[in-house]
Image 1 (tube, rainbow, N blue to C red):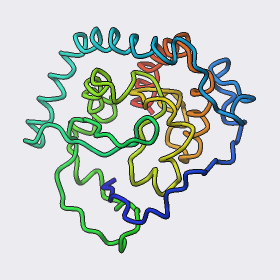
Image 2: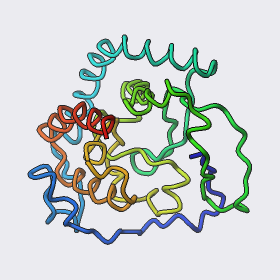
Image 3: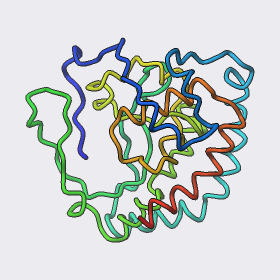
Image 4: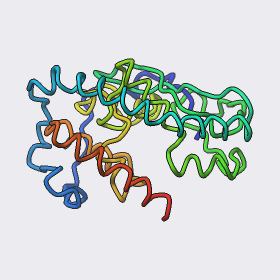
Amino acid sequence: MAVLEPSNTELVHPHYMPTLRTGSLAEFGDLVEVRHLSVPILEPTWYATRGKRLFDVVASTLLAVLMVPFLAIAAIIVVLSLGRPLFYGQLRVGRNGRPFKIFKYRSMRTEPVIDLTDGSPMGLVVDVDNRTTSATRIMRALSLDELPQIFNVMRGTMSLVGPRPEVWSIAAADGLIDHPRNQVKPGMTGLWQISPKRQGEIVDGVELDLSYVSRMSLRQDLSILLRTPLAVARSYTE
């Protein structure tokens, strides 16, 4: 999707709270505790205030080394399939609603974006198949295009685990800029990413994000990280 940046600030709803459908959370077992979702307040534990950043720095450094072969493979795919530029940045919503630029490998041919929405923050739906190649579609299916986000983690704009980093214009339209889910940094992976229903409505992802915020812990982060490769493999085979 080619996304336009919002020009109508009235569409940003700082007090927006979705209607939570608790039934969709049952599949996550003890990773999700529904009763906490009504007041998703991040408790100032040691892990939340200091430990998580320490974990991110150490773990992302180790993972960056392990990812070198995959980063190289993805870079070769992009250069051979699409040429340059290799990376692209996109404005996303960060902690406390602050904007930041997320880094990804480019997986689609560059096309000019024409504003056909008269200033409204709606994205233009494009034909992904026509803008991608067979190689970059495989890269996207395996989430290899997401790997450069490890450098966002190292820089401190993202975390290894957290709410999904929503596109700024989409978040503005859905009232997710100043929202309780943004009490923590967005993550490379999270409850939504390991969900079998990750292609559902945005409110389904918000439910999971609120659950994560209310129960953030090292145990939960490790569990989500360990389940992520299986989730990627499952989405590729579907």
